[in-house]
Length: 212
Image (tube, rainbow, N blue to C red; front, side):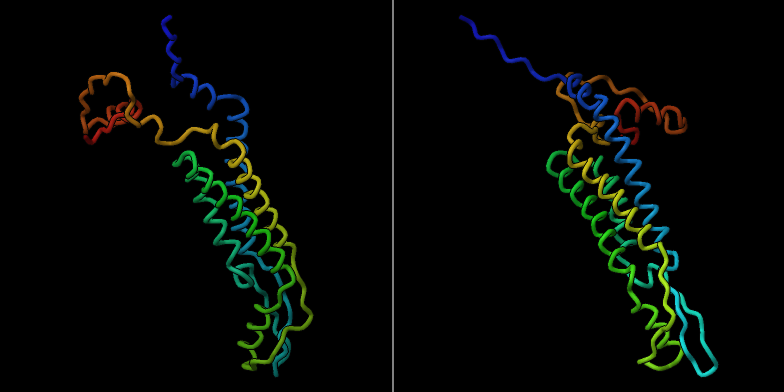
């Protein structure tokens, strides 16, 4: 009895899996949450997190410290998170898992840094020492803003985007997928006129290298 050959998985089935409603929704949600979270964290790091008065011989001088003065972690991790969000679509399999984990950890790090910096006065004390010329000078009447918690919210959005990538990333497409060489017969490469931009775009759309 002749054995029936095992059917090979077609590219169309992979495309159907990628374009499933669950995959599309999780992809859109991760992109939106990741981009929004990184933007919020960056903006929050530029806002005043703490304010106070430095006592000098001539009187009290108002001082304020931005999020970047307090800690550079949220801004740095927001940039890392954005890079990871883009890199998720440039890698596959284990690489995608690692990048997704980096995205989630970036968000968690922003949350932790925001919570720690919410009550920090070290940056204000340093400014007081600079203004008064006294290394032991401190700030009085200190008040803290809500911006550290806004940064935490941005970090939480990045964290959720990373978790979505970890959970559903296997269903998402990769940017270079359509440019990979297939196992089927090669089609004849059409001539590309480098002076015609529309020909270049058409070649890219066919998955060809217009510079080759």
